[in-house]
Image 1 (cartoon, rainbow, N blue to C red):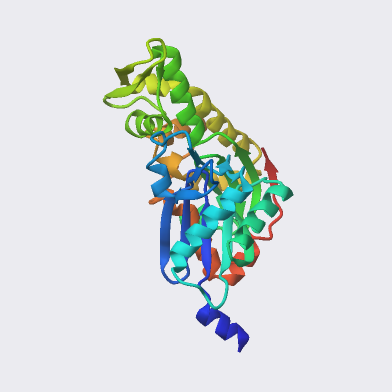
Image 2 (image 1 turned 90 degrees about the vertical axis):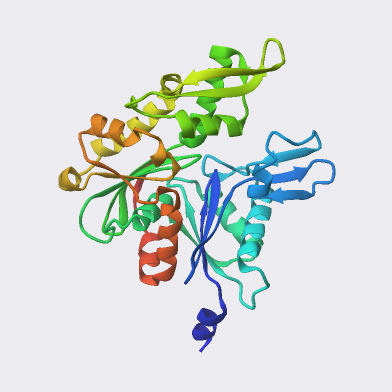
Amino acid sequence: MLGWLYSYFAKDLAMDLGTANTLIYMRGRGIVLNEPSVVAINQDTHQVIAVGQEARNIIGRHGQRVVTIRPLKDGVIADFDVTAVMIKYFISKVLKKRQLIRPRLVVAVPTGITSVEKRAVIEAAEQAGARHIHLVEEPMAAAIGVGLPVQDASGNMIVDIGGGTTEVALISLSGIVYARSVRTAGDELDEAIVSYMKRAYNLMIGERTSEDIKIRLGSAAPLPKEMTMEVKGRDLVAGLPKTITITSQEIREAMADPLSTIVDAVRTTLERCPPELAADLVDRGIVLAGGGALLKGLDRLLREETGLPVHIAEDPLSAVAEGTGKALQEIALLKRVTNTDRRVER
């Protein structure tokens, strides 16, 4: 009877708590929230001014009293108190009114995070009002989300490139056989562009500008038709606003080092792959998920480096959230994928 009451009144949630964006999946409704993982705080009063998209809109445009914080760094909690505030805000926004029963919550986390980092996620979720908190590893959630047959006795390889981490995993029989987690992903690509602009043009650009450059000009392999773009920033020598024109070739060169780290992580995972599962990958190939999968030419680069077919997920940005949501709705699957023995390297 209690179980029936709980299933009727509770609004169970699944969360992709990402460095760049947080997505929430509600049982029976799908993805109901997708907002940047950003919080704006008044430094004098310590009052939260804005969370999510509203906070992102004022990055680089606020006065000295206001600071915008991204409380997650490299996929894990860097600022516990701010993270708890952010999670509570997002859950409240989704549920809209006080619930009789606190929601059960499934949270996707990077592979290889420490027990202290896991405890931080659980405590932050508890402070936000959740109960029965389960943690699912991001590559497993991404694999479920893109529809890979993770429960079969066959090799499935997923590369999830988020904002803070790149997760590469080999999955079979509902478990991660081998995983490689590197803290090089979308944020490092943005930082590489910022560094290049300083070095090549003495131009200081902001976080949002570098991300815009990456989206519009960024590529991992030569494009059929190279592109150009005007970029505005502050001249580090004169101290005045300045506009320059850059090319997609320049941005590709600027991102070469972090892209090389991601490619190395994929190659290392393939080298540790058991022979029987490696044979499956010849036909199945590699699936790309996460926002980084949208980088132009990345599938082609990995295809050339590995010799395997490379497929981009139909909706790479929501793959982890969708997979976490599916695990939430299937209790048997949730138990299998949250209690798996696996070898992880960082």
